[in-house]
Length: 252
Image: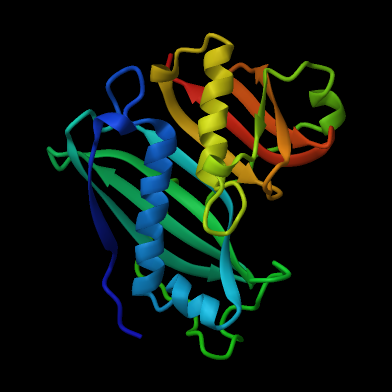
């Protein structure tokens, strides 16, 4: 199928979306990025409604985001996204964020799989009846490579520390799939860092890996470990089951 080089969505920073330093909160930015990614997938023939009709869904595995600056209150900004295609089971989707001055103020990379909507077992791209083959919109990686992985700390090492906060999968945290949306994990990371006294306005890069779902009524203990570059933040449920891992890099 013929598709454009990229897809775009325009946004406006509402006061209710700002953090305490008058700029868009990181969790909201992550949500806007994913909304744009959803549009981009649809433009490539993989709209969620089409996937659902074929008993399939998207699962986000990991994301890396770089922030030059966050859009500020009342600012119009644009997010651009494109698919670089698929490597084996893994779909890569890239993003750029442009401020009202049309300057690039951030970029991101993400890796997804297409899975069975009931079992969440991976599906082989191009082999699902009713769905197209993967599409390459643009052969460009914002970090120079497919969204990189980072090494997780063993749960036993994490648990030598005490959790900073505990969060629950209450009603307001759930999405249309009846589990905690992955953008909420980043909001919880911000809560944990704030609890530790970190200056959240200094965040320049973050990586997050999604490991397991959190469903209604479940709880997650969030641990924060200081590092040379900033912080390592991870969430565990049932004491040792990893929910997510993240690395937060601060500007010097």
